[in-house]
Image (cartoon, rainbow, N blue to C red; front, side, top):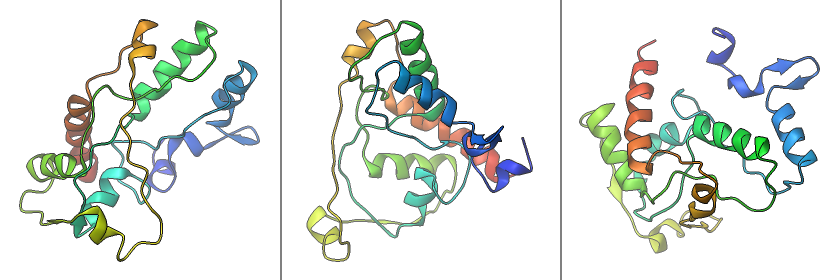
Length: 169
């Protein structure tokens, strides 16, 4: 899909008259799933990528959150659709990860010597307008369906290894 994916996430590339991501979202809506969170590609460097964003920040908070690896999110969502499940499912990698843990792994796997400073939420709010919604979600309902994503830190580390390879392209 290169060179198009150098400037656009592959999920946003057109298929007929709509972006590729439209079709699975429409199927989810038709299946009765109305709360849908879109997650961008994890291992492709780009302005909307969580890793790219965190690496650009000189100040990092250290608060646990849930995250979803895009590829695993899509696979799990398709499995839910095949099973015709409806309702609220937290399609997140099990466990929690902090921004510091992600950046520490980034320093190890992508950019040794990368510098950052840990700040508190109170410090963050002195220069941001929006408050953060920090949350750790349970994926137990998803796992009860037999759908398992990689543990969050394993997913982060493997994604960072791919991210580092993609930076060199």
